[in-house]
Image 1 (cartoon, rainbow, N blue to C red):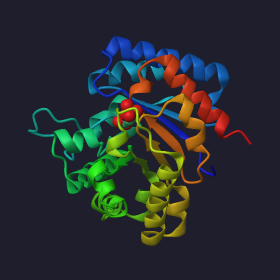
Image 2 (cartoon, protein in one colour; image 1 turned 90 degrees about the horizontal axis):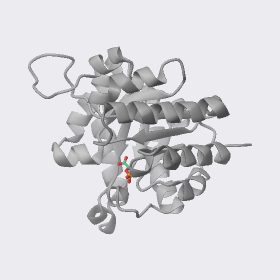
Image 3 (cartoon, rainbow, N blue to C red; image 1 turned 90 degrees about the vertical axis):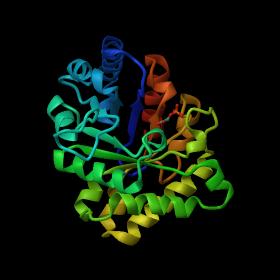
Image 4 (cartoon, rainbow, N blue to C red; image 1 turned 45 degrees about the vertical axis):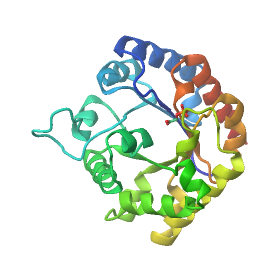
Length: 260
Ligand code: PGA
């Protein structure tokens, strides 16, 4: 791994603000004790309601906080929406965009994901763009086409510098929350498609710089092997991120995997 690894926890609709703050404090204590953040980046994505408390719990450390979903709007008459501008002012540094659960539940299109990525960048947030195929699409041999369509839909119109600021999460939909992880070879093959697409569309530094993380039933037992693949630069963890022992075991595995 030549890029600095990123381990991110997507807490989804779990953990009330007090629980989220307690988990953030436990993570923080572990990272501080081991100087983990000297070696890798760690970010957590609580519910919007918990962001304030979690930012407070992380204050003064390098443990980063992100928002799970933001609309393309900075403000205005958009009932129910979240804004990247507000997330930034609350202390977030990351914005998840295009998670498959949002694409599914809010019928979010690639164009809307792209608008959210642009809004996140304008607000000063680092987008973590999620892409990935369904099982039907994989069985139909469409993995490359789906990934390339999701990339171009979300990144069109951005400058090379802006794309270089993003991270990309390859999350095959069939692996999310199912306990069925993509094999390191399957994940590496998909990450190589993403890297090749970046290299084909932008100057060389973009393809070198952008971190591509894997998500989908990640646990400590499969982290080391996944992170040995040349194009897997980290992990995005759902279910295993909402308790300190399981998430910190993944964090520690990532540190071990990137030891020289
Ligand atoms: P999972 O979720 O680890 O529970 O599969 C990953 C994600 O949705 O980001």
